[in-house]
Image (cartoon, rainbow, N blue to C red):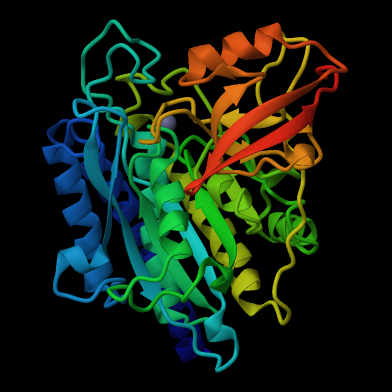
Amino acid sequence: MKHIFIALSLAFALVAQSFAQKQDDMRQVVEYLASQELGGRYPATAGDTLASEFIVGKLRGLKLKPVLKGKKNIAYYQDFTYGKTKETERTTHNIIAVLPGKDKRLKHEYIVVGSHYDHLGMGGKDSGSRRPDTLAVHPGADDNASGDAVVLELAKYFKKNRSPRSIIFMFFGAEEQGLVGSKEFLEWMRHADAQRINLPTTKDGIVAMVNLDMVGRMRDNALSVSGTGTSSEFKAMAEQVAELTKLNVSCTADGYGASDQASFVAADIPVLFLTTGGHMEYHTPDDLPPTLNYDGMQQTLDYSKELITRLVNMPQTPDFINVPSSNTMSHAKFKVTLGLMPDVMGASRIPGLRADIVVAGKPAHNAGIRSGDVIQEIDGKPVKDMNEYMERLSELEPGTTIPVKVLRGEEILVFQVNLNPAK
Ligand SMILES: [Zn+2]
């Protein structure tokens, strides 16, 4: 009896210790990424480089596989350049590492588990800061050092507990600039690249995506999970895990919430997006490490672990269901809607306005316009930026059919869009 008792208390002590350890590790990740030294992790700054090296250091420590031929840190970077003009042009990267699956058949199916690592830098006008008049480090502890800390813990866990499917751990760059990193990743996967290794050959090898953005401020055990309608099994799965982990999970069917998973759902990949939601410090210099709920992050970590475990073990490939967005843009000012989300940050380098997400079942989609098309003209008048787009939209009348000229790849196409009244 005594021995059993000792063994049990020892086991208990070990569990308690590993619990505390995980939380300490997450806290350390947040405290470093959201430190003043990193300056708010704005793309293509010294803080971006420091954050990236820190994350790659952890991935290499876990002996996860890089995605490019070559050596050391850069083998984990997918570089990309964005910005319309020479002044605004910036080069940054996604950080990507792969854990191959152990099942002969399922290892060819990949699940992306991601979080963005960039933030607003020093803030300022047009930065996305909610205090645009204050120039100060926007530390982004919740947004999104919290997500990064949880994803790094997930990488550790799945390295120890190998899964049948392969997992791609991804830290997106330039999310705050208009989901640039996630779009650039999918664009990269559309083309063959002889330098690319360990990833599937095309984006069709990616069967689901799980995104964590702002998971550091859990209140009342509440977690929001969206995208639960984008695949048949997802809602039941999300609810089962909620029951198991005793969290109050609220499900949203569509996957168009404003973070990187929206790029994947627009590419017909089912998604699950986890967040603990907004707060007063969101996009301000006060989004600081001490404001986070680290017990809550532990709960989100436990939830994600269970959810991803189910995903990587599903016997059948998750199907994709196209769920229109419940809240794309406010159409209050307009009599009509096209049913698309334009590139609001102007991150595309091509002249015109890119339709980032075209919602199925809405006028633009019905006419044949697709995500990624760059709008050149509406009703015979030019559209070169967001302002002109809004202007064109305000001139349109419901019940009419108007031509919309777009650039798709190298091709100019004209679609006849039948305008329904705005809903
Ligand atoms: Zn943000």
